[in-house]
Length: 197
Image 1: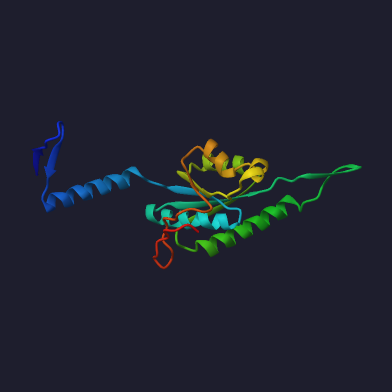
Image 2: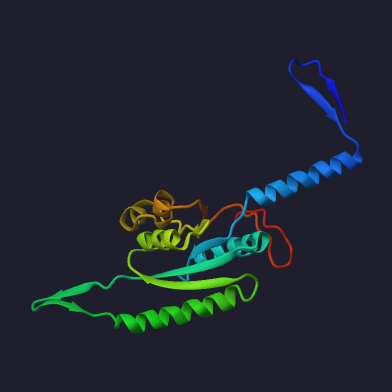
């Protein structure tokens, strides 16, 4: 290894031979791998195309870092319908709804992920943002990965943004995949997506 001064003040040029270059690149790659570890990735699932898109990122990322996926589905809260005799609860019983959701989430995991990476599922009941953040905190996940639904204008004002609020309250880093964007994941055939959908 040779170190030479440069015409610019305070800078030097480091010359290395091939063997030294190989050792340096191996050392920095190993250090990077140790510094960036993802044990588990939480992916909220609402069975939409946006959920599938989030998995297009989560599965390769989990495979690359040896992570476990935690798929979380949040069941809606029961709403009461008013009548002249008072509120009436109209949805199906919660236990039946939970069992249906658990079956659907298990089927979704098998169809979309298979045995590509380790995966666990969890069904909750409540408000999506609160439940996603609570599960992330309880489970100690390293990353939340979710996709936006792309609501704008009045729809955004009325529905709010789950992604926006998860980012605000999450106990860990959050990766948000936009509905329409330039992709950086590879398809099953090995083609890299480089254009907007």
